Image 1 (cartoon, rainbow, N blue to C red):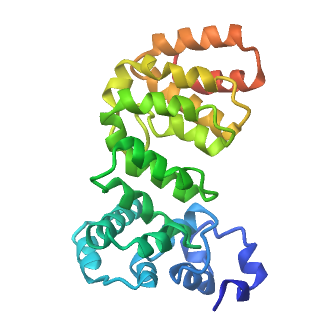
Image 2 (cartoon, rainbow, N blue to C red):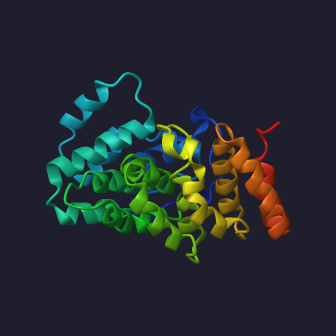
Length: 265
């Protein structure tokens, strides 16, 4: 089946709320790489061992690695596949192109982990190469990028923060949001960045640029970043929010401040 043969009701679906309720035809198309997932339920339901066969690579070793993990979460499975593709096919530029431009969001998710493994690239070069995925229209791809690059980013904050400060003025909200989401002090499903827990002021150049961002997507990320920081440095967050409220009396800033202060008594 070609993409233009897919029934319009499937392409325009809202997506099931429970995995058991995903229609069989939808699941088949997801696992065949012919459609994108439309919500987290579908994204988590994808069978990546079936999906990766669309790339015409040997899946035996991938299957062994995945089965060696105990109840691996989807993100870990994606990591294993992405790193495998780099390790065994790093010189295959055509395969990389297929992965990076694939219609399946789940297959595009392999690309950031491929890039993260490229030993001949600096962290700045990896970030630049990942920009298409940071700006991807699909939520899953955008989340995978920071998960893939965050470990190395956290080791080179002195180089990464100036770069992201420039990105914080980008016209695209997805790019701006990455500037805070990728470096959350506590984050979600990832290791904490201890230095940002203790010294959150290091990210002030970025935070200042986003304190009244027009995008709710960005506002949520900035507010969550500061809420993370408030767990160890409530003084910093309280003082910053007080100053922002006085300097920037906008609805956007008020929303960020409320979200940032929610854990401070």
